[in-house]
Length: 269
Ligand code: ATR
Image 1: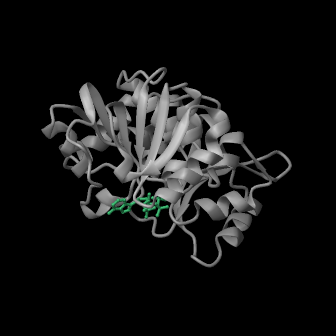
Image 2: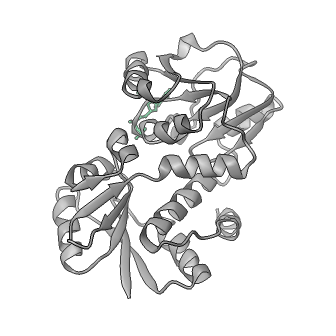
Image 3: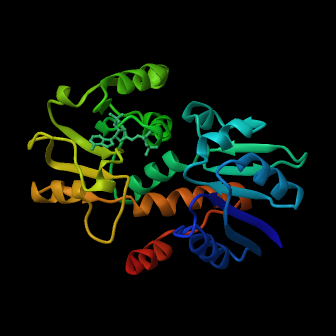
């Protein structure tokens, strides 16, 4: 049986084993996928022993995504730019290839919701690792403009500079937000503590969509903010399932259906 795992610390709450078990059953793949808590001071050693043991691939989550990036022998172009990986694949020569599927998962979920990205005016809130990981796939959809705003303006400006060769991207501080957007994506970790960056009331036009990369059983503060203004709010549970589907396809060569898994997860929140 081909073996896979998710590596994180802590890892007990991870939904990945359930998601990949459902994908495996649905696609008829014989595989095993378990959660492993790697020690904080030895991510690399943990991965190397798993490879020696015959593990074929892994997902990587907090706080190891950057360390995983560093140990890769080869990287996808989007992972190289992201500076972090969430997916490891063991090559036939035993080397490790790394990719990040978060951005592809975000784009897939937006498309599933019927959101048109080509030609769209997109605003991204936040400029941390989570945002860096999704910019390449978003820009590949050729939005009219992608604006990244952050509490610390310099981080947003730096991100925009790093991705400027891929499309129309600009970075600024939160105070520079003006105008209306077709899509606003919250990539800050503020909602973890129930916070929301200050946002103008007319940020979204009547067809505007608010997408939160976080999810919760109840609407997140950002989703609730959008709904209170008559706009559509979508949380990031679908992104979680879609990024898993992209990883699964990288390992197994078959693309799983995501709808059933997503409804089941939603019901269990
Ligand atoms: P992650 O890997 O989740 O992106 P990170 O790199 O620490 O984590 O980035 C967190 C992001 O959330 C940053 O953009 C951060 O803004 P700063 O760069 O100014 O720190 C943003 N963030 C966190 N808490 C916030 C808050 N209360 N209000 C606004 N932005 C916040």
